[in-house]
Image (cartoon, rainbow, N blue to C red; front, side):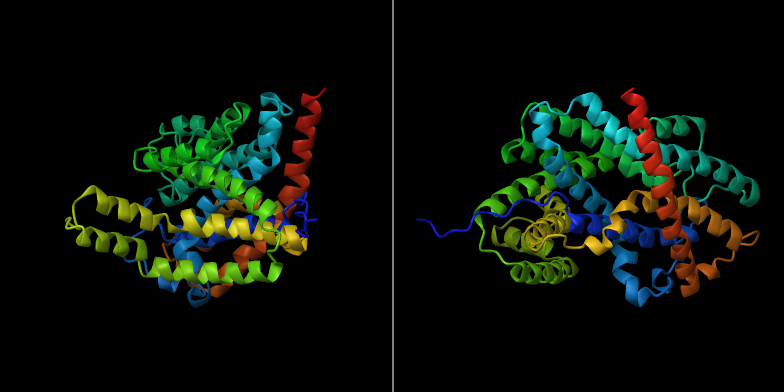
Length: 392
């Protein structure tokens, strides 16, 4: 008789991943703090990022917070293959139902923030003679934004509520996801070519689409790996997973800081007698080095947290509310930045206020409650209303 313990059931809700998504959203806000120092759509060369508020504490977020968008995509890939992959393959979830679920969740707040930013940008141009950060605020780009097509390669640049670009790209990822699941192409050998496609597109004019597809289907591969590890490695303990997560973050930070993938590839080229500069292999080394987080840190973090929560249950439940407001904080932080800029820089071009810790505390003290109110009293009611109207 086998003594192996059966695998524990997969949780019905991954609170730890909700918490991670919320933390990623706030990381993007830190990354976008530089918006307060843009002049005529560009960050001036004189800008010193180390002067941003509490830089010594939040330096990783100020310097690398933009990478959290790739973490969003990776999380989405994992969650969607977990929640919908099998249902779509078995035709239990129709295209209409899937589209309605995504539309009702994403579009109301997008439409509201688009209108708010459109009015605010007109006022900013009237008051300061230029738009705030994103310059392409015309009718054409408004139409692209309206149809969530702002970054499908049709745009001339960032426009209106610029952070919505990731949602625009995610819509394309949803279409690919539904197609591959309906065809039941959910194995790793089906998803790996899509990851490769994303990597190739990331070197073209539609690089943002490529980054999105790459990270989304890395997340899908992570879910496939999760199902295998969860089924066969029943001996894993929560304390082992916690130690692994800490070691992973420290190791990846060291690898990234010392440019290990790039240096290793150049070493291999030297041993092979190939030139280390000006060839495709060097370009590949640079690309690999720039994707260290997406290839290792993000999927491994998601995998470890999912396995850890499977064993510990409700891991991160106390912070899961951050996941609820992640979309709100992501879309609302730019309109709030316009308001803060308008109040702090009424006529002159003095940005000193945004170098003080008090400006940072005040901004988050406004953003988080506003996001909670948006989620509870705007997003959820409208989502329910759209569902009721759609189902008669």
